[in-house]
Image (cartoon, rainbow, N blue to C red; front, side, top):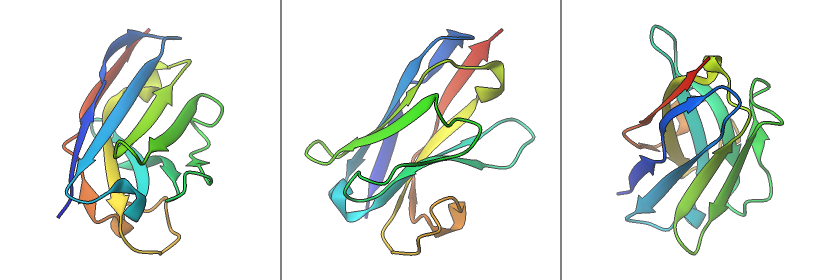
Length: 125
């Protein structure tokens, strides 16, 4: 079993930055593909970013490309999401997720086996 705990959310003004962390316990993060998703009120959960087991193949949604950076520190079992140039439309609950398989469909929430509880990010205009 794997437990994921997100932290780092909060309230920030438009143009500001936040760094989210996802700490994993139970198994080492290098066993999983890691992803970040977000869900705004009244909307479906959407893909934000994902990173391979080695950390060499980050993938991003078009809406965050160039502003967000996903990274991982397998020694500390932690995955990060650095969010810069935040916009009000980035406001959502952010979730980290882990996939133990090899589907390659990193942007689909259905393939992830484990999820954190979420952390709120609010960007004011």
